[in-house]
Length: 351
Image (cartoon, rainbow, N blue to C red; front, side, top):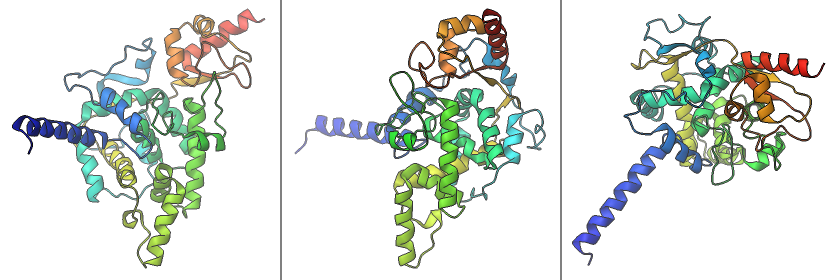
């Protein structure tokens, strides 16, 4: 029979495990256990932290936000369409609303109650969000897909899962190779935001077509694999049951994964309804691509672009070393103004 001390210790350990699993459910997926650790340590840090952290940038990051203040709650959610990115995103939503489903409601309540944490993710996403929205619009894909990296990795390019999935879109090695993301000793395309975004949207477009233009099933397959979803569909067909996402027997992580994306669309689509505010993100490019045409050291590049070298590393996490790739294309993302300075100074030194 257990002693009183043993019973107390057992209860304490069980409580810690339960609380940890509850936190991980916010954004963990089947392939994202280590990514969830990023969210636990970075996103869901102490509630005493009330300010978004911009200390890692040169100050150029502030240009993304049109005001240092939060966007005011407004009854007209489309009033900022031309000036702010949120209005543009809302106008390009393409999913049928599923906000009344209890799984979606669960996450709507969580996101609404954790406004500071949502702001931290938005701050991480801000440099890349315009680029992703542009890619989605060019392809005619719904804007809700811009929220996938929030659930996958909290927009953390260095996120890595226990299965080897990496980057904001959490590509596993096999799928990365299939969709043209290069990996070697000096570069990992899965962590390259521009390259991985194009690959992820290619993959999602394929899944959308594969599952009869059903985005719910496409997202489920993105999370758990198309084979898993196809088997679930076949089981329901044999049993004469519905093959909708809500009716399928899928891994628990997947049954929670899609509702999180739907909940984000609802909360970001109607912030005033859920009594939260969002930072205003300017509806204009923050990043531009530069093509040095040859291998270039990042310290030299920082001088030519008149910016901190740490910011170059942060915006180009695919590069593992202090210079661009020795072979292949040489392209990097820089803030628009720094890109202009780089091109101007680079051309002067090579003419």
